Image (cartoon, rainbow, N blue to C red; front, side, top):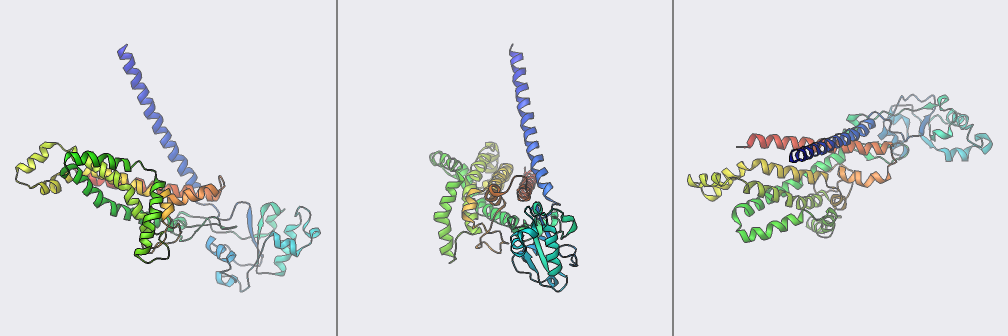
Amino acid sequence: MQRTLEKGVEILIKTCGYFTSVVVILIVIFLFKEGISFIGSSPVEEGFSIIVSKSNSLQSITSQQAKNIFDGKITNWSELGGDASDIKLFSLEDLSKIFSEEELGNDFENSDKCIEKLLDSIPGAMVAMLDAALPDKHALNVLPLDKITLYKFLADTEWFPTAKPVGVFGALPLLLGTLLVSFMAILFALPFGLAGAIYLAEIADKRVRNFLKPLIELLSGIPSVVYGFFGLVVIVPFVQNLFDLSVGETALSGSIVLAIMALPTIITVSEDAIRSIPSDVRQASLALGASHWQTITRVLVPYAASGISAAIILGVGRAIGETMAVLMVTGNAAIIPYGLTHPVRTIPATIAAELGEASFGGLHFKALFALGCILFIITFVTNYMVDSISRKRKI
């Protein structure tokens, strides 16, 4: 009976393990399937066409060029290498003003002929039309836009996914914002976290340790939105006054808040790693004439390098993946960060802020999944690197 029960528990544990592994693998596959399907897509909003005159010599334009045209920054085709004619934009609304209802038809069944007539009379015209209002768009000169490539997605410096009718998907500002805030957060948190762990494990007496340890562990359970409020009320005004800035929501504010959030994890895990070192190691070092400080720096810390690395990994994971607190204190400006006192936007904050407004299965939706893939790869590479370093340094 006992043997059967043990066998049953073993099978149950194995099943749970296999089930969890399969679920994790399926989630990763789904993430990359949606993210990869974004690469190679056209940046034009689904259901829209950009139509130009048949005499227009341009073969294609980029999404940034299209956005600049609609923003009025490019006003002549010669700026894109085409003929020297002014660009005039038209929409379905404009066609209704130019042509009568009879000419267009009750259900826009003659809209293609009207567009052709308009483009013949104004060679520099560009019409953005819904495909549903075009009975035969193949008879018109639909201007193709360059497809989204992996290089463009990673290297372009503008992120305007909701621009109409052509979205701009450059993830570089978001990627740099994420790396800057996370790196600075770990840079701030690591010395304080390691010092706190050494103090609790080797210097503090038992009464102080018993008081501080549960208090620090309690900090790791505070919701991130509370840290966000703390950052918004305390850190942001402090940074704004310190550097005399117009706004205090900057990369520095985000780094400080993230560093505070990562501290409990780094301290707790590192302290556990140092305290788990066999006392023989400590005693042997002292017996050889090393001082307490030399024993800490040259024996205990290197010995606990694996555990301290795990603490760093968890701290980096907390910093890179944090969403709400970063969303509240970094300013959320999707621009290339040129310093710590500038607003930035991170990848998790972008996904959280924009997923609600992205239509399911649309281009914007897939772009957010592609950002999720980047976040996954950054975390995976970081974990692998720290793990490799800790294995090499372990004595």
